[in-house]
Amino acid sequence: MIIDTHHHIIPKTIVDSIRKGDSRFQAEIQVRDGQEWIVHRQGYAYPLFNKFYDANAKQEDMKAANLDLLVLSPAPPMFCYWLDTTVAIETSRMVNDGTAEFIAANRQLFTGMATVPLQEPELAVKELERVVDQLQFRAVEIGTSIEGTNLDDPKFLPFFEAAEALGVTLFLHPYYVGDKSGLSKYYFTNLIGNPLDTAVAASSLIFGGILDRFPDLKVMLAHGGGFFPYQIGRLDKGYEERKESRTCKEKPSSYLNRFYFDTLTFYPESLAFLVSLVGAKRVVLGSDYPFDMGTFHPAGIVEQCSLSSGVKESIYQHNAFDLFKMESTSERGVNNASSIYSGRGQ
Image (cartoon, rainbow, N blue to C red; front, side, top):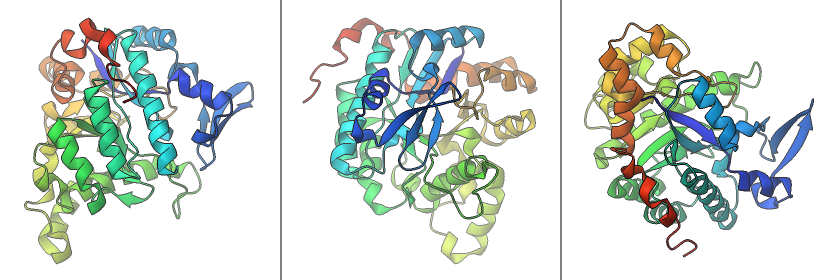
């Protein structure tokens, strides 16, 4: 079995709402050279492929890539962290309900993650509780920062506490928060900015004491962990030499086993190093589908590495089962899909 743990969705209900001019999302659909694009008022724009929302298109590409199960996560622009909180809770609910409906139609092929309005942590906790209790989600995707506020900010502590208590996995994914100084050209906002944001987020969880405070919190990092695992020695050096960096209980490298990392590194040598550094049980398959900086054949890079069949099986399926608590088909709710909306709207 091969599981893609980093696979994006924009529910059709959201696409239809934006197409009809729903102002809550602060976005519009434009046609550029015959291709529809979603253009967000905060500056991000990307092609609106039907692969975001069409189950048949996803299944065709699954078959071509020999994938058996997709863990669907909202496309990062669906975070809507820039919206007013009263609107953000509405958009989060719409995204989560739409994702749950998509999954419920074919639970043999799809499972997924929710999103929460983290610009207001109290509302984020309420939505977290709702998606766990009513929609059966076991993971939530969050930004690597919340509109530039790092994840070690004390205001996020109630959210992390709730996530740990509920046993919810957190998938940290960077998103567009505007051009950074020096990164406005050459698509550096993504090429360098995204892995940088992930490194800052992971390091903030360590140095900010979040992982010490919540020892059972499960965290997955996108894009092979960004720059974080490849510069862990520098973080250790800072911990040893700088008083202001000696804020966590142990040296930073001691926390590597607190994270899961996807395989999206694009370079077999990088992936092989990652596996050797963090261990085979901390790496999961990921594609970032269907964005252009993803891959339609995520297992290809794994096959290019000199890894044992046992290690490959861990990456392809066993680690995902552990990370997302997917022990069997029935565990994913195949037999009770009709109850996914029990209490919906309460």
